[in-house]
Length: 204
Image 1 (cartoon, helix red, strand yellow):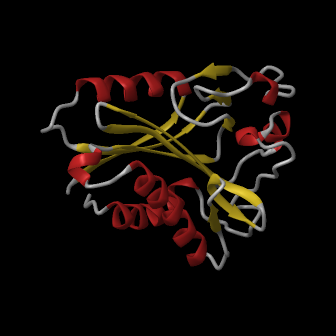
Image 2: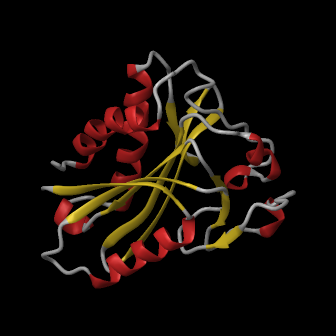
Image 3: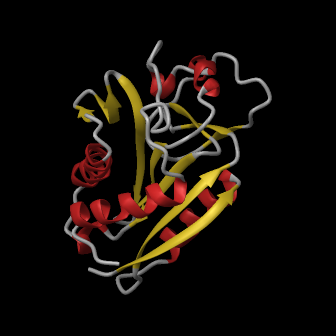
């Protein structure tokens, strides 16, 4: 199944979210699937069931209530956002399978850098020695997925201390740079993409 890859560069969060919604609402059975890569200006996002008590000290970073699953997380420069806009039935992917594909492509990426990473059954995402490297949060509408995954590449991790990441008090967060990886966002995207396509059964 062919998929269109779009690299959006640095973007504000809310306009991209609205574009994902509009794309999903307008698509039909003939609409090609797309994967969007971007990085966002600083923002905290709250999932549909997120509790505001997990926002400890947001300061001047904007807060956006959105329509994905999950709790609160932070997005900012140096973090690779991966948005799979997929017709799940056509791609023969269940929601759990898509979550697993997103997680496993990061595990494979980390392995290529000599890093041992793993997913967790009790909390979506990818972890290295207990620290969160990537977070996953999806929305399924009209049989199609949007939102996706945030992979910490080389970013200021301080804003994560202002929240309980993904609703977990005291959860530590890491990025690839802290783990010794020197590749930039573009290089990480190029390395990640083949793993993601393989696990989703897609071809660019």
